[in-house]
Image 1 (cartoon, rainbow, N blue to C red):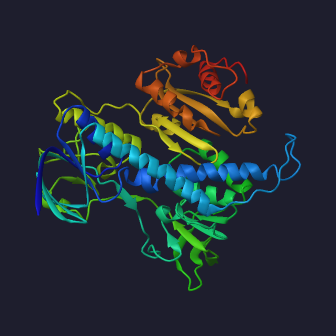
Image 2 (cartoon, rainbow, N blue to C red; image 1 turned 90 degrees about the vertical axis):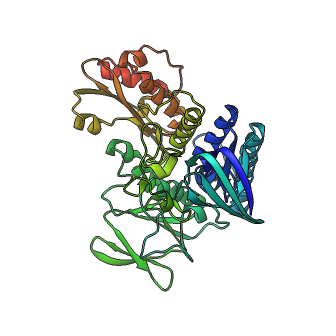
Length: 462
């Protein structure tokens, strides 16, 4: 067994871990990262990036299909075909480019990468099992960034026709019938993509609405679009098992039903990865299934930090990145603390949803006297010219001083507005700040200014 020593050891090379490592390297810390998979974690390898690549390909294919018949734009073309294997190869090439990019940044900043499975001995010692044997690593400070994994249902364990999002993003043929168990953002993103690629898609959701974490005014356009794409959604329904022929057994409207399926995609949530690497040896304080941390991502053990999905909601890559950067600076002796006013949540459905800060209902429950303003994309010239008028932008603000508490929207391509939403809240903007900012015309961003004007009582275009 070979031995290594370092100032900072990070277990997990996902978004939180690799950002922490790069920033630590920039600050001159002797840093080492351990991961069995290529750098980038779930997000880069089997999550965020692959899913957005598949969504893009599906959108392009769906758009091309509209030109296979006489079209009101005056464009006609032959009916398109899809070779999903080539699509997956293209997706994999993007993942590989980004893997190499992270590896290159490690080298640039002096970060060492050890590929293998880590097992904690104590808060300063880790054993790594790699392809060539075991390595013992001793460190001064340890960062846990092990991420999360898909949740399986006892009645539908992964295997055979039952797949997680990981396998769904690697299929090389479009299934004839895809049943999605779970109407959250992961299931709807992937299900919508496969519907556009030609699959017959059915969604089984236990709750009374899709995307139950979002307010109804944001999910309504998504639900309408699912109908337009031919996706059947069963609400208040429960998946109960797998039939011998591969069909999904479910209870729908009180009736036991068999739904035909070539593949059954289970997307009922994700769980923190806290098992399999000796976490119990550290005896850290926990909050339910998550590692308990303070405002500086410190655990109950002085030399151990934790970041990302293992520390709780929201389980988002950009939250992990921000935590990783902060922790690196703290270890280097810089004064930092977690003081984020808002973390953007983006759902890449069709249309997309962006939510930052408090919703109308959350603000009221928190005791705020609020005012709101909204602007529909039906009144947006830019939305009309792109043939996507579905959706709206909404502002939630305090009535007394007009401080913006939340910015929310649903519409085609509005994920790119998420940064401006978050910036407004981070900078403690008032309604007048957004209303008084000149927004370029014609753009979708004008809806933000119009929503602010609506909150002030004098919208110009509705």
